Amino acid sequence: MNLINANKSHWDFILDLRNEDFSNFYEQEKPITKEEHYDYLSKQENNPNFHHWIIVYNSENIGYVRIKGNDIGIIIQKKYQNKGFATMALKLVEQKARELGIKKLIALVKPTNISSKKIFLKNNFEEKMHWLEKNLQI
Image 1 (cartoon, helix red, strand yellow):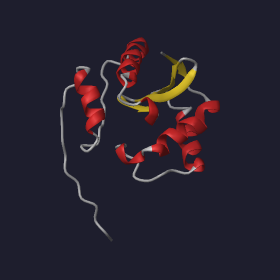
Image 2 (cartoon, helix red, strand yellow):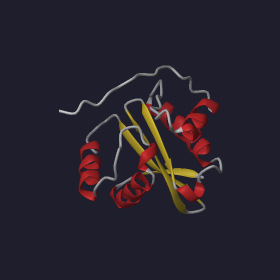
Image 3 (cartoon, one colour):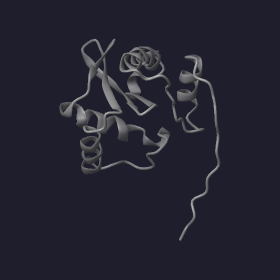
Image 4 (cartoon, one colour):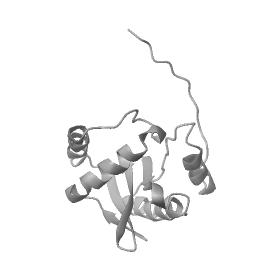
């Protein structure tokens, strides 16, 4: 398994991953449109604190990992989940982060996303905070 730099040719693959199981994502509450996704990634192209890679296994794209500031996110295609690929990708991206001079990674994980939480905890991430929020209807 290895990581390759993500580029525009991967944007549709990343969009499919983001919409495959968005309910587990911290900030995404619904499927996003291609336009929203492309707009977001276009803006990130100029962000010096945004780095992203495609996770490749046996010459097949199986996932995506990105670091935005210190925030790390990993998405693995459903058919490859629970097989250790996220842990392997995490180890590879930690090395990339060190090479980039990043001193700390933070994984914002939804409390209901138990599998992601387990991956980060078993890889020596420490649980640091919780908060409560309320959406107000106006």
